[in-house]
Amino acid sequence: MPPTVKVMRRPEGVRTSFLRATLKGMALTFKHMVNPNKITVQYPEERMEITPRWRGTHRMETHADGRPKCVACGLCPTVCPSNCIRLVGGEDDQGNRYPIVYEIDEFRCIFCGMCQEVCPVEAIHVGVHYENAEYTRDRFVYDLDRLMEQDHPTSLLWDPSDPKSE
Amino acid sequence: MSEQTLFLIEKSIIVLAVFGGVMLVVALTTLVERRVAGFIQDRYGPNRVGPFGILQPAADGLKNFLKEETMPAAAAQPYFWLGPVISLAPALVTFAVVPFAAPLPIGGRVVEMIVADVPIGILYILALSSLGVYGVVMGGWASNNKYSFLGGLRASAQMVSYEVALGLAIVVVLLMAGNVTLTEMVWQQQQLNFWFAFPISLAFILFVISAFAETNRTPFDMPEAESELVAGFHTEYSGMKYAMYPMGEYAHLVTSSALMATLFFGGWDIPFWTGDDAFRYGDMWISGFAADGTPIEASLAWWKTFLTFGAFAAKTYFFVIFYIWVRWTIPRFRYDQIMQLGWKIMLPVALAYVMVVAGTILALDQLGVGYGFTFGLVLTVVSAICTGLFLLVLDRGRNLSGAHSKAQKRFASERKALTADSGD
Image 1 (cartoon, rainbow over the protein chains, first blue to last red):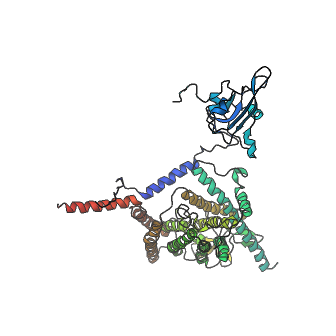
Image 2: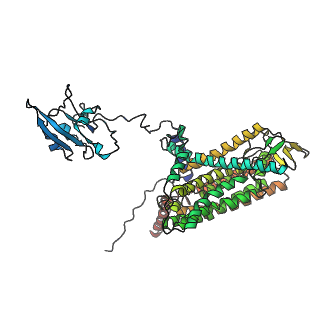
């Protein structure tokens, strides 16, 4: 059997009046032109509301006395899929473990939020925040002090009213 | 001061004012285009630089001046440089013969609000406006790039196709006005008490369509056609040389809008008011003729000049907005559709319409109907019928139709053939 081309026919619809279609189009664009409700968000003045489940810039929770809540258990660097957390743990004379170095490379981070999920003491969090432009690349490696300074709300990760995110 | 010095001073001021004014409007139009495009798409468009973004054109200009210009290695240099200039200059020069306001009486003199009231008015416009396309063709060819080349080719083909219909539409206007100077055309429209858009409506429609094609605006922007030809004729251009192409395009836009306003919408005439009528008749300025044929002296005043200038600006800018509105509504034609529309529709229709109008005017003359209200009314009716027929023919889905109606036609004939075969 020789190869054949199957010709798909266009559906037979009603005949279009091109004049009417053009005028209709013009009317539509005019309606949008004079429509005062524009969808643009005038960014620096107005901002879009982001959901409480947003996973953005990290922050480290602190105790009341200003120490980080982190106990340097090493779970977050272990679970981190993009390997962006550097943690060097230490121990003080009472045997409490604390992070000597805690760095997150926000460039490597994929904002999966697993560090927050895995943290046993709810110390590291991803935050509801997205404006983290910097002038140099090295500013994107957040050290412990910087992580503790962040003051944006932390991510809920899941919506309490919809825990299975259905 | 001698008459000559005064004339020189007065004309220099007008030239500078018109040139500056047109350039300002061109700059403003680039902004208006982007803002209207934004509004149509439910956005705001550029509104950051200055109040309402009014300084955006200045920022764009500065940016374009500071940008690096690239010169394609294989480009034909002199023509590559000449292209943008040639596309911009004719559009500005064309404005010289467009009267933009009623004459201004100043210090015992009457200053005509026009750069040069040359006796060949419309012919000058026809000669120069089509020069603009040479800039496009030259730029496209000199770039030595296949896309630019195709863009230039298309521009020339399109110009040839639509210049004919444009010229014939203007012939109809000439039949009405009986003269080629634009000042006289404005005067005739004031005398007729009809703007030419009504007694010769079909010519107006043909003129608008051709003007769209002449200015290379969507839906006729085949030379640019960014979806097929990268950026068409200005693919290789950058920096200020590139900026001169859009400037040329907008200058053409403004000029052809001014032409539409002048030829078909009474120029600076204010509707329903005869107080602004003025025309140079020999040595005096007249506003009309008395019943016995004696001229009536016109009353000129500076505020009338300003009012009529306002009317002219409003009419012109209405068409500019219309251009922009159409651009952001209608998608680009296919190339063969453009050629079909140009040669198979516009040309014969324009030819036939010239004959119809000429016949009607001749008949009216023979019947002794003078140039006046009845004259205009009869022509309006005749033209309305012609326009109706034209739109009907256009709308039968033969020419501007997409593949859909063509397929329908094919299926219909196939079905006919099938039923014929089945032997009934």
